[in-house]
Structures are given as structure tokens and as C-alpha cells.
Image 1: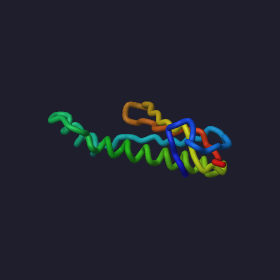
Image 2: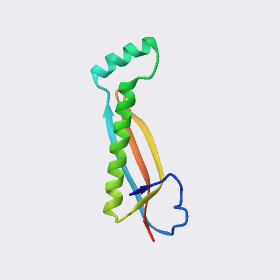
Image 3: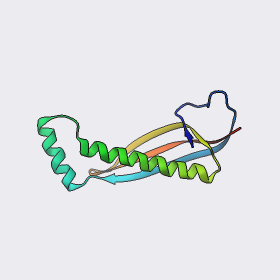
Image 4: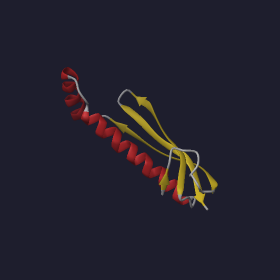
Length: 103
């Protein structure tokens, strides 16, 4: 499955199949919060949260790709990510784009 943030695939024509998306909601873990709180005292990257968000992005992408495959797509163009806070301790990651079948 080809994924691109561009609106086209250079040199290729395609048939638009429709919007596809995948999302996940992740919550912080109390153990990670304690370690992150300590990191906030000394500064630097909060690796526990970075890993949490990286995993959430991958899961959202996997779900989006699965939706695209159901439509018979071989690429997703105009790929974007969004995030939103659901509650104080949980966030949604959304991956979305346009499923296309390359010619």
C-alpha cells in the first residue's frame, strides 16, 4: 500500500475510491505519568509519551490502510494526521486520506 501526503502520484493516473480513516484513543498510564513527572523536573524528551503517541499513530495508520484495502485501493493520497483530547488523560489520533486505485 503506497501512502503519500501529496494529492497525486507523480506519473500515475488513478481512480478515486473515497475517504478512508483510522483512529485510536490512547490513555496515559500511571507508571508513565510518574516517570514523565520526574523528567519534567530535569527537562528533556518525555520518552514514555513519545512512545505512546508513536504506537497510536501506527495503529491509526494500520486501521486506515485496512479500510483502504477493503475498497480495493493500492494507495492512499493526501494522507493527514489529527489529534484531539478526549479527556484530560486520553487523546485520539486520526489518520485519514483518499483511497485510490492506480492505473
